Each structure stands twice: as structure tokens, then as C-alpha cells.
Image 1 (spheres, helix red, strand yellow):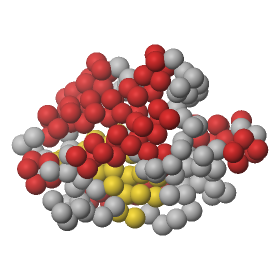
Image 2: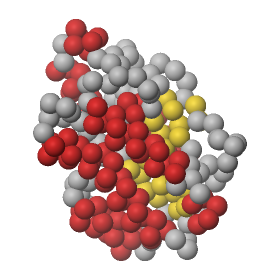
Image 3: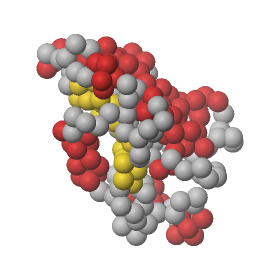
Image 4: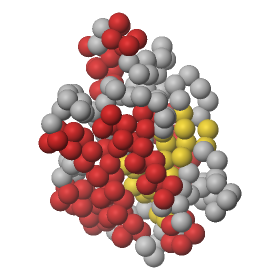
Length: 199
């Protein structure tokens, strides 16, 4: 079905549709996102608020609906975040996007306890530039000089969607991972964030 992740009723109906169609819900992948300009602080609250709705609130709503349907049967939730939310550096290109993606990562780790408590594993992949049609279109429309001036200039070789799908499948198949974040900076090897042994 077609759903707008910024609309509460659409998000709930999306999950309910999957439950009705397939008799239950086993896997949810939160992959919607975007950050069209103008950006905070120049954009008005209605615009940047919608970006938060799509990139974070929609993830929280879908996750909440999924958990409700997964209790008693288990399941896997994989959130797709971004390196924009994983660094502690200035990000003037789209602060609201960085904030939302950081929130997705923290939501993931905050729900790590559900793995043992309810058999619901929540994990997250956090890549750099992924060669989606939207990213490719944005880069093609952007002058090279502007690309070089970005907080994180795009690399020569972008991460492929199939590579992200492979990580999602790894999270689905590995029953030992819950509340973990896979970091994949541009031009580097992907790596799982360490577990905090102090808790």
C-alpha cells in the first residue's frame, strides 16, 4: 500500500494492512526518509516539523504499531538511519535531518531490551551516501563546487541499495543482535557499535 510516513493514520494502516494480508507481522524495515530544502533554521516550523515527522516520528509510530503486533510471536525491526546523525560535528546542510537520524539511532539502542523481554529485536543500519534515485538526482543537479562544500562531500563510489539490503538481512537472520547499530561511513568498512558493558 502507499503510505505517507508523516501521517499518523497512514502509518498505522500500513502495519494493520500487513497483519491482515499476511496473518501477522514478522519484519518491519523503517526506510522512509528525505530532507528537501529549505532547512532549519531558515525553514519555518511547518516545513522542518514535517521532516522530523517523516524521518523520526513516523519511525516511532511504525515501530510502536509493529511491537504491538509482534508481542507474543517475536519479530525483527530494522531502522535505516544515516551517518548525518552519527557524528558530533557541524551539519549546516540539514540540521533537522541530522537530529531525526540521531534520534532513530538512539531509539534503536533504547529498545534493545525488547530482544530478551519479548523476542523483538530492534537494530539499525547507519550508512553514508546510498545511491538511491533521489540521492543521484540531487547530486546530478548540484554543482561540483557545491558538493565539495557540503559538510560531508559525497565519495566517488556510493553505497549501493543492495548492500544495505544485505545488512538488513543479516540483522533479520542473526538472533544474537538486538539494540545494535551498524555504522558505515563513506569509504570505510562497516562496523557494529560496541555494547556498553557497564550496564
